[in-house]
Structures are given as C-alpha cells and as structure tokens.
Length: 385
Image (cartoon, rainbow, N blue to C red; front, top):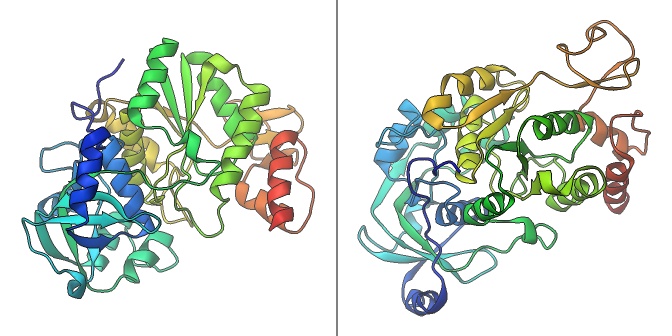
C-alpha cells in the first residue's frame, strides 16, 4: 500500500468529546462565513484529501504555487486553496482564532489566523488558468470577487458539510477509502476522474483498468461544476446503474469527491492526481482534455505533464486516446485500436455535451453510446427538469 503523498495523511477532523468542547468554544469566536467552494475546500483539507495542506494558504504558499507549481517545501502543488474575504468584513487580527461558518451549519470548524493579505485575483486567474477570458468558468468566478484579502492559517474541522442525500453515503474520506482498499487486498488501484455520468468511452477505459490492475476507484467530482453540467445526483445514480448491472463487485469502488471543479487543464490534472494519490491510488487515468474546458488547453498536454512528473507525484499515469463508437466494429475504439477512425461514417464521437443536447430536445441518443440503464437515469432527470 503506497504511503500518502508528501508523507503522513493529514487529519484535521476533530471527533468525540473534543469536538463538542471546540464547538462550545467556537461560539465565542469571531465568525467567517464560507462560500460553498470554501466549505468543500475546508472539508478536503481536514480529511486529508488535500494532504499535505493543513489549512488555507498563506501568501508565501500562494506565491510559490502560482509561480513555481509547488509548495514552499518543494512538493508539487498547482492549485491555490484560498479563503477570501472583503477587508471590511475582517474584524480580527493575525494570531486570533476564528469560527468558520458554513451556509447550512453554524460552526463547521476553527482557524488559527496566521496571515491576512491582499490578493490580486486577476494575477491568480492568469497564472493558474492562463487566461482572463470571462468565458472560462473559474476565471469568471475569480473576476467577480473584486478586491479583497485572503486569510491563511491552519484549520480544524468540527463537522463535515452537508452533502446531497444521494451523494452523502459516497463522500468517503481518504482513510475510509484506504481501509476498503486494504480490506480487499488491492495492491494496484486505478483512480478514474470524471464529472459526468458514464458513457461508452468511460466504460471502455474502466474495463481496461479492471483487466490490468487489482481495483478501480471511480471518483466523480460531485461538488461545484459548470452551470450546464449534470447535477450530482444524476452522476451518482448513473454510476450506480452501470456498476450495479455490469461490473464485478470485487473490482470497483464508487466514491464521490465533493470539490469545486477547477478547469485548469494540465495544472488541474496534477492537482487531481495528487488527490487520488491521497485516496490510495497507485495509477491515474488521463484521458483527452482532462479538466479542460472550452478549448483553452491542449487536449493532450495533461498527459505529457503527468508523464514527466510521475516520480515526483508517486502515481503512474494511464494515458489514453479519445474513445469513439465504431458501428462497424460494434464497440468503443480509439485510433490505436480501430482502422476506421478518421474516415468512416460509422464512427461516432462520444460526448456528454452532445448527449445532453439530445436529451434536452427529447431526441434519440445513438445506439451503443450509453447503456440503457444509464440512459433511463438521464431521461428521468431531463423529464423532471
């Protein structure tokens, strides 16, 4: 079983009697109201998904990440994890403890404020996402924040945020996933990143992973996605249909990852690989345009970057070409496995963007692209909406 990325697996989730005591003490502290994105980041810091982070980033950490792609310790890290606030809302000082409040709970956690510092959101957007184009969903969110400050410091989590009822049972911690991996005796574990319900292209890759390695962690992002993405419950229900009807029980573990999706192309790919390393994966699937959006990134650059960083990250990338459906072959194919790709009318590009557009207008999804059980789940969602 591989060691956690960066050493020990961080655990900042307070339990038992100490949690009750900390909750009582937190009532007397100045509050910070977290956004939905920050709630999820707080949770992932505390449970070890973002190990080795132990809190929201200080200025030194932010500058190191956006300029060098690493933490001050030298460990690779590519995405800033910040707690933002307006200057007029800050009624505390460096060195104080503050109460971290969520949108649905009172006290989610406590932070020891190490630093309060100015942040240039335009610079962060440019350095992380490579653009200031507001059509980019993450850039648009950063640019709407305006001027403000970031608050850096270590955190402790008293209570995990509320997750969607369908998603909740799947929102496992890295320690819980690692325990299940150990219980099943898996020595090689493939992490599969996704943010959509499964289609034939996903199934093609997942079956390949199950054939070659001990286990498969299907780990869809079910936190904050783009406005036109599927909702979390549709993603989980669709995967329940696929896994429950078609996959061997002893080969697959389905868990969710409640985070804000960062569409940062290669930089996001590094971030997502580190997270899967923390969850116990030894391998990580890198498909075409992983964590890309709107044509902002080279669709295969993430594969090149993760290949070059395999030793630093301690996880082996599994790089795959784009998967199509070939009517002549009757199954999922890539340019490496089918002679018809690129010229035959029988070859269909498999895209959830296309599938969503068909379902919205009540059309017929091409045969072979989706399992019927998955299609029924997605039809139910579009009929309801």
